Length: 399
Ligand code: HEM
Ligand code: HEM
Ligand code: SF4
Ligand code: SF4
Image 1: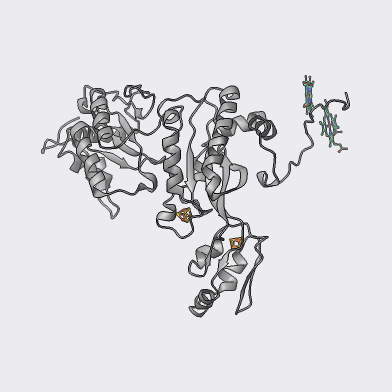
Image 2 (image 1 turned 180 degrees about the horizontal axis):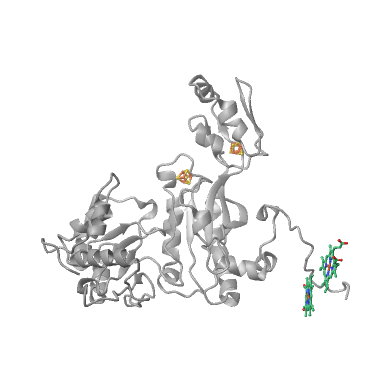
């Protein structure tokens, strides 16, 4: 690639992406050129990819740190003669603090370490949650890992292991959190360090925790196990605040009651009535009137299982496994549940078969029996509409 006049690669296509109001990643990469050589070659290779409309990373790459089987994603340029500084360009996943709360001290520590050992480029954060340190060479992996470990940071997950769990900000900043998402996230992460660092599963397994059904970490779509806060008793209503919303011009009938999916609310101009036994805890009314309504007092979570992206058998959202676990029992329940699920998955899961696909293949009833759970009506949105029902032979039954 021809060098530009200032020693930087000529990047006519990428330069166009410095225009416009949104923060430009091209500007960021250019500014990272001040502390490292790799970003320059990264820009060069990316410009070439823009021109040719194809990637220039080799297939795969197996690197890591001693003692761990995951956490680093190896990557090599397929044109290293042209871009030697990104000949190796490995990514390190660093386990983020629950809820992504940092002190500037913590961030400075990470930045200093990464400027010494890597490209200076990051992704804050990877979709699973990790801090992504983007681009270093194989010989720098151990020293970076050592320094990070000394500063209190560990690698996150990758490969067929428990991936880095993540959660919404929960009780730290949200009045709707029905349990302490950050504590649960941290505790599970610590409890399953072995499963996280040393891949032992048939495939990946992700856990995400949301404090309420708004699901701000998208746990229902992006985690094999989704833990979503909910409540059992009545929505808490502050009549005075409801009146203030009405006085402030909110059309409660139109904006709240008519949009309630179970049509269990009524507003007569003075009093808001909620048939709580019909409420499906969709959060809509609470979202619209946060000062007047809040989740009930008997709080806990629903545990769902099976979400995944399309490959192989099609995309899945998690589906209900345990309709309600009281807040103070969530952690113990999950630990017991994971023991059983992982055992069943170890035994029957095919290589690279997600838990959601395993359930589809063996059937929910076999899966439930395998992990020792009873079927519950909350597990289905509708009963089956075909008659291909399998009955188990019972002793003394029809032969
Ligand atoms: C559990 C499996 C099956 C179900 C639920 C099923 C159901 C049906 C139904 C609902 C009809 C239409 C009846 C009508 O409109 O009067 C039908 C027709 C028919 N089925 Fe089945 N069937 C099954 C298996 C089979 C099998 C295994 C065969 C052949 C190997 C078969 C051959 C036929 C034939 C030839 C017709 C008549 C089609 C016609 O006259 O247009 N069915 N079946
Ligand atoms: C020449 C045509 C067919 C052949 C050779 C054939 C063969 C078979 C065989 C060997 C089985 C497995 C039986 C077992 O494992 O117990 C089976 C099951 C089945 N077949 Fe067919 N089949 C034919 C046509 C059809 C047709 C046309 C239909 C539907 C319209 C059909 C519906 C089914 C169903 C629903 C089962 C599963 C039954 C169960 O789960 O117990 N088959 N078939
Ligand atoms: S998921 Fe619910 S509890 Fe968590 S941050 Fe979002 S609204 Fe708040
Ligand atoms: S949470 Fe949803 S279902 Fe329940 S009363 Fe409010 S709007 Fe209706």
